[in-house]
Length: 414
Image (cartoon, rainbow, N blue to C red):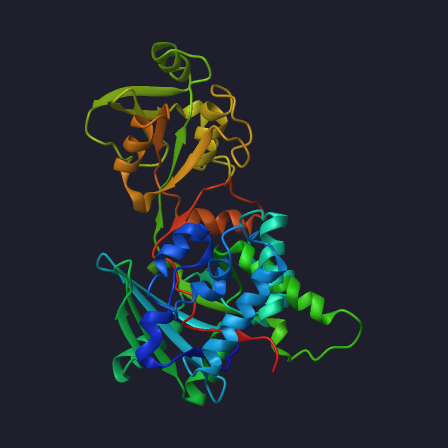
């Protein structure tokens, strides 16, 4: 059963939250981050991407970057921009994007729950990305970015959260630069906190929605600090910062593909070849987004097509193989275009659905050869795969809105 633990958050004073809160470090490069913080010395990107405060020639994994992140975090605390709460509490974090709200509970989850698979994964992680965040967390002595978790709906938890929201004023309520409403309430009543902790102890599993590398890194920092014999099981390094949402409030967006060439095929040859496993219909000039599973949009030579996977090439008995990303990869991208490892092949790129289909057209018109629009993976597909102990293909899910970093920091030790 899942462990939920209140904590003494280090967080912005009310008037500074909008300036501090920043998109997560892994959704932009260093140049984009440097542009985003212009005129704002309080942005949490100064902590999460501290290379922006060093000479441009600095290697992003240089020891100086991690030391600068620690320095910048400590400066925000020393200057009173960030203040630690006086007692362990839980927090409610609501985001509203394009009229859709998602409300999560902010607290700490357990390193042991990750190790024992109470917190379930659905992606592989990369060692280099893990190493970066391990170094960052360890040097800063803090979880600086929350892990995005979900679970199957629990009506009692939802009703407690809704009742608290309706009877208490938020401590933060602003619209971030990306147009998303960000609202936070503090649950400072010990009895309510205890009730929520007890309810989460009844929830069998939590699922990582987004943040596999942050999660794995937080766990490995905890394991590192346990090394060498006896350790305090209640020490903060045994827990990591999380925001936990009920799955019914979340939405996965499409994660689309663009390809650099047709592997030597002419347009007509390519369409003939893919027609062996897909029904191909010309849709015209208007962008086409699939409306049902196992269908795909294709933008090629200025026109859109609908591809429908033929039934004999859909394996509904396997939770991974029946994913649309698997069907496209296994029956078109790999055998026809000879892109067998989409994680490393430079001929393929991925475009989050937040950018829209116009971005696919732009990429093809400016040099890529063909684009595919996808039907979004569902939360239930994600959880079923995690329950089966399997992993999704690369770039299967795109969550929006992104959780801001800097609104909550979890210190690993005093």
